[in-house]
Structures are given as structure tokens and as C-alpha cells.
Amino acid sequence: MKAILGRKVGMTQVFAEDGTMYPVSVIEVLPNVVTQVKTLEKDGYAAVQVGYEDKKESRANKAEKGIAKKANTNPHYYSRELKGDEMSGYNLGDKITCGIFKKGEIVDVIGTSKGHGYTGTIKRWNMIIGPKGHGSGYHRGQGSFANQGRYNHGVMPGKHMSGHHGNKSVTLLNVQIVDVNEEKGYILIKGGVPGPRKGIVMIRTAVKVVKHPDVVKDLLVRVKEEPKVEEPAAPAPAVEEAPAPVEAPVAEAPAAEPAKEEAPAPAAEESKE
Image 1 (cartoon, one colour):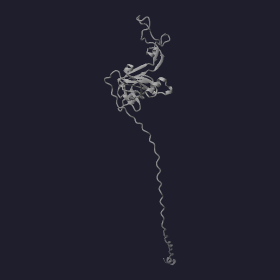
Image 2 (tube, one colour):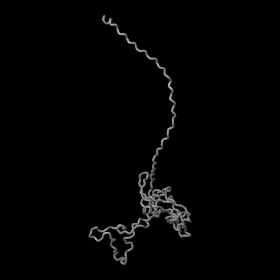
Image 3 (cartoon, rainbow, N blue to C red):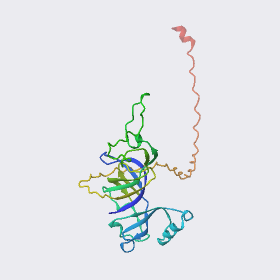
Image 4 (tube, helix red, strand yellow):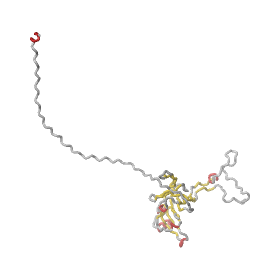
């Protein structure tokens, strides 16, 4: 069994190459630093204590500073003990990444549910309200406390009553990992995960055995195309102008002689006719 701490970011949806859609919860998994190692000889049980998210030394108390100093690391905001046979191989100061889990594995997710404060039975236990007419004296009550004489000296344990709603540890069993990205540090888990956004969750190997888990298909990878930036055109090399050709002198042609006018015919010849 193996386990790791992470932070719930929110929900989204991813698509497989054939168009299958998976609704997933995104879990940010930063490296978990081993701050203590529990052994059977010294502590009576085997486990590792890990720290999640670095904290400034000025904001840490003396106990947190002492634990971090032994592990040669920084103080952390969250510390949890992770148990399992696969966790015994880590030493003080080692980092556990999300690469210990693989795509398609069945896991359990433990988180703290959303707190709703002090609520009535209608909201807390999903009871049915009474008649809405003005004559009815019962609208959002807790119902009858009669127990038919079996427990007359008090209220039977387990009676659904108003009280504090939520803000308790919830374990979600047998959910499937859709994708693991060790480089970017996240795990995609199919379906919802207990707790609000930015809540700390623990992912562990499933306690119950699933005989025939679903096969997770290869996800569609979308590559974001970067806008092409047109580079300014390089200026054309300057071309030296060739010198203008020298024209050869043209000899002028001799002036043409004026045409001779014909003399008019003599008048005598006209009279003979």
C-alpha cells in the first residue's frame, strides 16, 4: 500500500482520443518531504511522517523547526503519517512525488467534507417537510421521538436530529486515476472528491479489491499553437546605379530643296480649243 498528500484544485473534464469524456477532479501534488520515520522497534508501528507545502521559519514554532532541522528541510504547513508496506523504503529527507501512482489504478481518497454549521433535520438528513398550510403546526420539525417503550429513559442512539453538519473526515472508496503528470505535479481522479476547493486530501491504494477495473483510454493532447510573429523584412542591399550611356553625336541630314511650282498653260492654246 502507498499514499501521498495533495490539494484539491477543482473539477474539469478531459477527452480521450475517440471522444470519450471523463469528468475528473484535479489534485495538485507537490513533493512530500519525509520528516520522520516510524519503526516497529522504537514506535511500535511502521510509517513515515511527511510534510506538505513549505512554511517560513518565522511562522513556525520550535517543535516544527526542530523536526525540519533533523530532516534538513523547511518547516511545513501540513504533516501527516502515511502507512503502508511500500512506504517503508524512504529515508529522512526523501521526496515522494505523484509518480508512485500510475494511470488506471484504483485508489481511495480521504478528505474533510465541507462544513455547513448547525443545521436542521431537513437539510442535514434530507427529511420531508410538513404541510405548508397556515393551519398546520408542523413545518420543519424533527419528527416524533416515540420509541414504543423500548427506550423511555432517553433518546435512542442514532436518532436523526439537528446538529453540526459536515466538516468531518470522509473516505471515498474505489475511484480511478485517469492521468498522472509527474512533470507538472498533478493527478486526475475520475469523479468528485470530498472537501472544498484548496482542501488537503490523501490518496492511498484501494483497500477493497476491484476485480475488473475499467480501462482508461489515451487522452487527447491539445497543443496550443503559438501565434506567428512576422519578422520585419530585411532591407534590400543597395544597388549602385550604372552610369548613363554617352550618346554618340548624330550628323544632321542636309535640308531638302523646295519643290518647284509648275508654270500655268498659255492662254492661246485655250482659245484655239
